[in-house]
Length: 484
Image 1 (tube, one colour):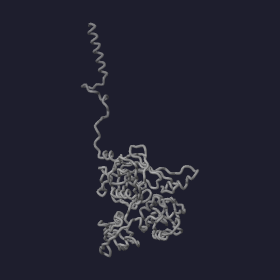
Image 2 (cartoon, rainbow, N blue to C red):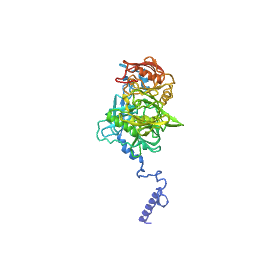
Image 3 (cartoon, rainbow, N blue to C red):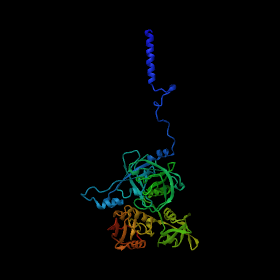
Image 4 (cartoon, rainbow, N blue to C red):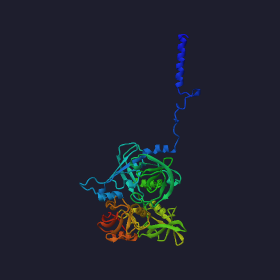
């Protein structure tokens, strides 16, 4: 064997040895050990109907931050009020307990108007707004608020805003998709959750800070958490169908939103007048039930000198039509009267003694009329109250939430921000036992005490039970008020 042949054989042997060391499967394919265990599909994700909504609306959803000074007697949470009573934080005693609050809002006009909940900004000394993707907050002006609907309007000085568009909530159906966008817990900015519209026409709910008088909520199972209040509830087209307002802390998948049609009407009025101008009749009405069905609004009381009295409305009448719209329940009449144009005659029909009677009534402005003498009367000195031992749903919920036993007196179910009651530090769940030394035992006594106080001078003294402790509070009469 010559040297050249020997070298060739040696090279071939070395190459063969190297090939034996490579993990090559039969047929020249890589072995299973050489292949990755997972598979990669680098294609784009499938289309989702929700991504377009998220891209469209999130820049118009804002984070709202409020600051309150509890030393000013503002409307506080029960926990904050309790902390203030035990740790007042007066001069030289350290910093007062005034944690900032947060919520959500959304842009509704190119002029800088922002819609949110009243309970988000109620009693605020300072309101700031931070737009999506921005770090710097801007101070917002409170254009006006409406505790009766739990809505408020802010305004910021900013150009180039892209307002959200309202949809028609009357056309929303149970089972339709519902998308909630907001800032849960104040720091999870731009969170989007998805569900469906679970129900319509929900009412008799106790909302944070009180119970709004005008309730016709959409119910949804889209996740709504603390901090989402004031954010939009949207359809698949990105149109606002509701304003997220409340959650049910005792359950999951139950949230509530103010329908967009009503929210839009409230916004337009606040933007134009700084308040909501509502119609007023001066009649106390309740649901009329016949053969197990709601069939109208039964007139219980007609207050003298009111539009209802001038129109000839009588106790025992059943309102079945107002302004050409059917009335099947007291709630229907409440909304129709509230939306009526002040000073414009409205045709209505009532059932009286087995026959229908046509009447014409001209609503006045609600704030200009006397106190509504409902079951527990309307707001007086900023207080809306119902019998503490009654079965009003707001009272029942407050009793359960605060662990308060039913007893004598009138339980506060709502406080108007900036009112005498708010300045005195009262809050929902407190019970009024006495007014100027006279017992407030029941709705009739409460109305009588209001009438006795009408026209008087000086503060009104209330005996309040809060957290099981009795105390007296002096409430200044509202200037220009017409109690009773």
